[in-house]
Image 1: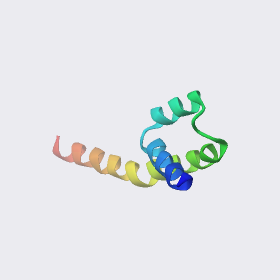
Image 2 (image 1 turned 60 degrees about the vertical axis):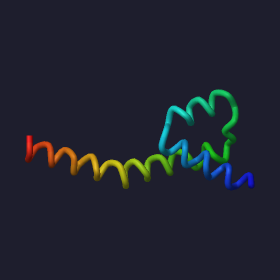
Image 3 (image 1 turned 180 degrees about the horizontal axis):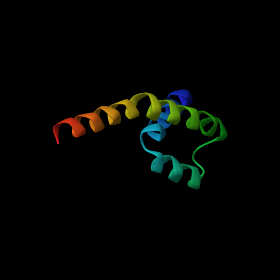
Image 4 (image 1 turned 90 degrees about the horizontal axis):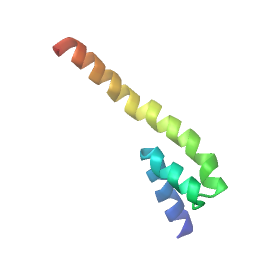
Length: 64
């Protein structure tokens, strides 16, 4: 069960960096999650969100 909670918190941290910062400040995030958070955050935002942002920029340049 701890692993499931850890994975759920990691997903929350990837989607919401402020949640992770607050959890880190109050001590509810352990070192294992800290090690996996940074690469997962970079992969998610570089691989998923950034291409959508580029499409948005191209569409706004074409249509507006």
